Length: 168
Image 1 (cartoon, rainbow, N blue to C red):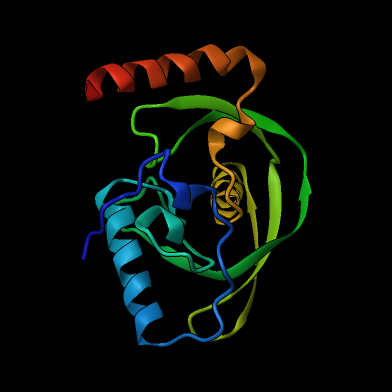
Image 2 (cartoon, rainbow, N blue to C red; image 1 turned 120 degrees about the vertical axis):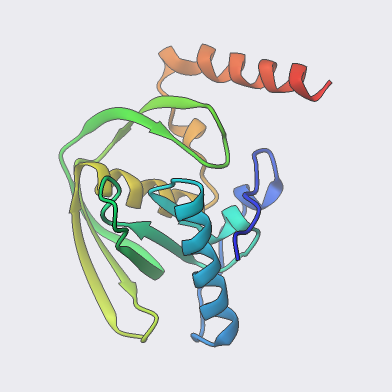
């Protein structure tokens, strides 16, 4: 089932998520819905709090430019290490239409559990490294405007002014 994306400034986007104690039917259904939602919305990644859940889970499409998606589930993820730096354009499903150049690490190593309670260590670079860092930020209550460089603060302000006008 495609779920509704939580939009900023909904408070759940600022809350730290809670670790998943066990994978049960509720978690499996949540993950299925998250994958379906991510693919339907053309996202590269999606954190649980973006669909209203407080669980520490995100999904990632490891083949964002291919016709056949290859989603991976990260349960209770933690970054083990990073290397390098890049500043590329980034968007967020919780901020439709806003794109900012966000500095991130070029390479990331992340540890997580799979849906089968197996330990995963995932090495990523470039776009997938960016997506992993973006989704872990979500799980920690950090949104990408928090990482905007000073020269893009005007873009953020204009975005909110436009949204305010549209809501009126």
